[in-house]
Every structure is written in structure tokens, then in C-alpha cells.
Figure 1 (cartoon, rainbow, N blue to C red):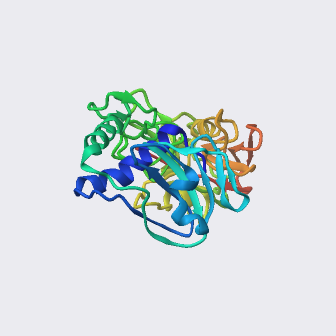
Figure 2 (cartoon, one colour; figure 1 turned 30 degrees about the vertical axis):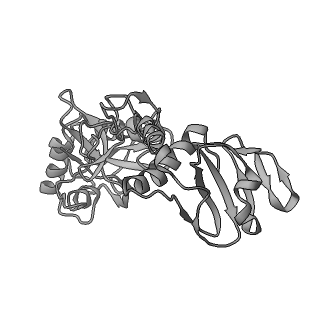
Length: 314
């Protein structure tokens, strides 16, 4: 457990002193659990750590300050020296101590405590882009929290980014509007044959982005075989979405370079090092496939069985 001077003071006053002070109590005590705890020294004057903790020495294993200096009663070693007003300390005790208290807060030092609380409350995140930004803070404590990329502070999608899980899958393509694109299913299915060997499905030859669905529907209309790659993709469901299809050649290639093994940020889509069918036919006997192990392409016989990764548009 390591805390900076500021961490220790803020933990002490904002979590311990402030609630008690707000209730009008002039005796500040806390219950210590067996093991590690944090306490604050709120007395007005410094005091030798041994004298200050004299009532609890039989239960103390170690006391540490913000600089890592320690007091070890068993060894009669005092590396801390004096307890300092306004500082927090870590303490390890052998058993529970109820109403642990080192001094009372008199009316004379009430104003000083309030000033300390006000001072600490003036620290906070001062970056307007952060979720915990507060215009009332006067000093930056550099503890800002930010939303996950593509989300706002309430957890809503603010923009689509590659690799984001949304719309039932993983985003791998975003059009120029930034509002629409393609997502891949979260896992593979298969292996399956492409199907329709010796049947020329001329309208399923398209390779470009935006043609995977049309290819899949053309295969479904022309081929009665089941199960095959296109029918399994069209029947796929996830998170209530039922409009999945087998990607075209270019859509499959886009997956590889955006969220697959060819992506700069690595294989975010969890693809296997296997061949994957596309919905793009080459001729009546062969169709295009894509290797996610190295990015090569080949047109295999339609009877070959490969993995598929359904996609959908949003």
C-alpha cells in the first residue's frame, strides 16, 4: 500500500474527518479492523509516534507514513519521529480496535479543520473533457476519468470506432458518415461447404463492400443445399439481431485488416488461423476464400469446408 502525501491527506479528511465534522462531533474516532487501516492525525501539535499511540502499542505491528518511513514497536524502532497534524498514516494491527482516537477536536481548532476540509475539497479534475470535471475545483489533482473510446460518460455510444463491440458484433467498417457500417459476429461458425457445386449463380459474383447480403440471398434463391455457408450465415442470430449474412470478398478482406490478424491493433475479432469462405463466387465450380493466417486468397472448389464469420450492416 503506497500513497502520496496528498493521497493520504485527502483520504483522511474527506472520508473520515468530514462526515464526523459535519455531524458536529468533537471527538474523532474510527474503528480499526484487524490488518491494514488508514488513520489521520488531526491533533493541533506534532507528537512523538510512541507517545501518541501509547494506548495501542500492544496491538500495533507497524505504522507507515507517506514517505514509507515506519514505526515498529516490536523492534523499538521509530523511523517516523513525530505524528504530523493533517497527515494520514497506514497502520497494521493484530486485532480490531474500537473507537481508535488520538485527540479531541476542540472548538478552538474547528475553524482550522474547516479550512483544511475546504482546501482539500478545492482539489479535483480540471479537464473539461473528463467525466469527473467540476468547475468549482481550484486546483488540479490529476485524477481525471474519461469515457471509453467511442462512448460518452453515461456509457452511450457517441461515435463508432473500429474494434468496438456494438450492434451485436465487432465494428470493422465505418462509412463516410460515421453513422453506418458493418459489424462481424463475435465468433466463428462452421466449417461448412460453400455449396452449389456446378451451379453458376451469376448474381453472386460481386466482391465489393455492400454486396455480401445480395450475394447471400442469390445463393439462397438458387441453391437448395443445406447447411451451407450462406444459409448458416443468414440464419445466424445474436443479441436479437437476425439480419446477418455471408460477407463478400472485399468485406472479408476488410475484416482481416481491421480486426483480424492483419490489423494494426491485433486480432480483436478472435479469428482462427483458418480459411474463411466469402459469398463471392468465381464460377460454377469454385468460390473465393480468404486465409486469416496470412492474408492470402484462393478460389477453392465449393465442396471444400471452411469457417465462416457472419456480418451485418448498421
